[in-house]
Image (cartoon, rainbow, N blue to C red):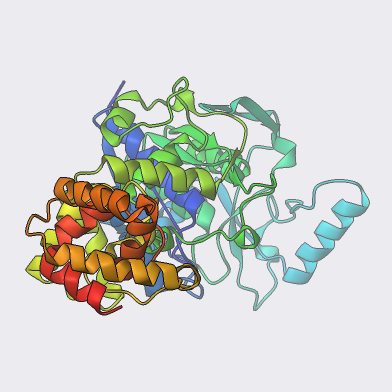
Length: 462
């Protein structure tokens, strides 16, 4: 295969949707698989809706996901002169023409087509008309002379062979009456100039592809290969939207998801390799082929994503996970000391078995930084019997100097038998006193990591 060049081309008019993030991932993986190039183009021609904030959100999301692009970012708005140049060439070659229709005339055409049971479309009024008949004071739009006979065929890498009769497609506008290029023209010119070989995008762009192919043909340019991927749906089968709780990609980072887990999950939304669910990035690059993309929409499942995230957290090295965790603890107001970090690293193996997101991990990890107030469940459970038992445990712990987890477990078992109490009650009384919670990693592990001085201080504070 010739050198592969793909691109991700979002519009900066809002947050980076999870479906757009998957599109970026597929383009990135495809390019990486073939040792090719992956470009980023910001399609900011809608100046009223495009914002710098949205541009920054795109950069931040791609950076978090680890989807690095090659070369400089292309801003479509900066290339308007080039788009206009191509449009002028088409006009000079007789492949485009000025249309002087008013908005009212265009509306009347659409209404007439609807009454006749046809698609609402421009009827080619100025296609072959003498420009000398143009009304005065009307700024014309520039339209492409699209083929009117035959059909346009797209052999899509995902959707397969698709064709549309050309009489269903009208002469699209290339330049608006104010001289600004349309999206259709800009996309084609940019893809051509950037040497894009493969366009992987959502199947909501499929109709655009037939129109854009007419521009390629009019310009005498080769057409890239197209792969239109099905959209992501919500759990109810409807297109994923805000009513499903759809969030910007960067918000999943704030919710405590790991980039590796998100990449894996997005990969499996519509692409598969046998029954494999856990596919780390390097393996994904090695395996990724467009042929693995299905034709049916996939369904976003936050429960499945959360479970997958838990897997990646458990598999991550403790020190690396601590690095991911630190910003979440800092947001809670903690400035970690060397002792805090030492305790957290030692306790990470036990903590990460019980958390599925970094937010959950941060809640649990606080126990190694400070004594937390009792939560509602712990308050209800910490009755007089446990308080009395805690007093006896404190006395027993005062006498021991070995605070290793194994020695502490032996001490607790010995005294449970001696006092005729349940080992679980002893552990729970200490757990509540140390952590403020009724669930935690092994209490003996916690005591070992905190050390005798901190343990005794917390227990006596009860």
